[in-house]
Image (cartoon, rainbow, N blue to C red):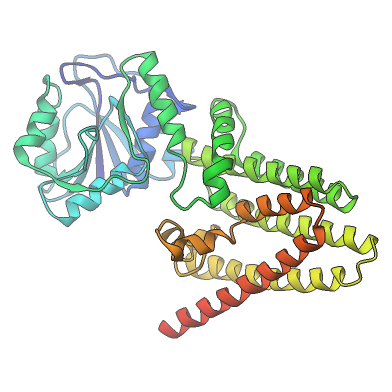
Length: 406
């Protein structure tokens, strides 16, 4: 599939932001091309006005975030080819949610000459055939020309993705507002209870502060692990409240790695695996800290219970690792579509989606902090063991059903 980025002059005026203007930490053109590439475009053309001077785009063309995904080319006329070819047309004078191109493509494939996202504000992305894309490209430079062409031809619509937006940014103030909407849209429909109510409100502000720094998402993941280990050590030495505050802080900061990865397109398979393994190591660390503290107090059942719980936890997680590695080719547990942590399940509504969120790490850690404040680390360890056992039973039941269905 091709993508055409309409740059230079749109609606009779120079497109803003400019292609090399920074938007939330990266050049605007890099954001546009990455969005198109992630939607499936392997060849991306930047359509530029003949009469206007051409900026030096070499830094974007050589950036590995796009160079590994698609080839870029600057052209002064729309490329030719078969009329039925699928083309994604993108306005360069808009900032929009990263999932809009995929939604527009789905709308076009469902039927209609132009696929768009429903809603008057979503005028940045169009999926269509090559012949129609040529009509749109020819009309784009005239005042209101693109909108008039779309209205004349007709569209098929897809529902807006979660937290979708489209924004014009002709000046610095409008750009600042668009960047805020861009950062706020980093939330996920599959977020857990504590993540949605508490953690994202903090992590998104941290990501806003970090988006223009050289801090890499993997650096944040390692920082979250350090906080979890420090918290576990504090728990083991009797400072349970301080310890769980540190572990919860690590969980909040851990949200920033995914936010920055989505914001600056710095995701990778290595980053997925690092995030997954660090989360599990953090769980093992704080459970071990509780067991060590209770054992020092003379609670004889603490060590055997913790050993059994961590054994069940490790068995379940290692099995999921094997599925990710050999079946789903991912490092993200949400990629297992039939499991309790899948994006599809957690993004739904009703009890079926609510119950799995009670097992998510963000909610469990808030409960653990409450028990630490109440001075009931014994109850915290029992809760961890019960959760590990119940999760293991549910996972293996799901796996057996899936294997039988296959």
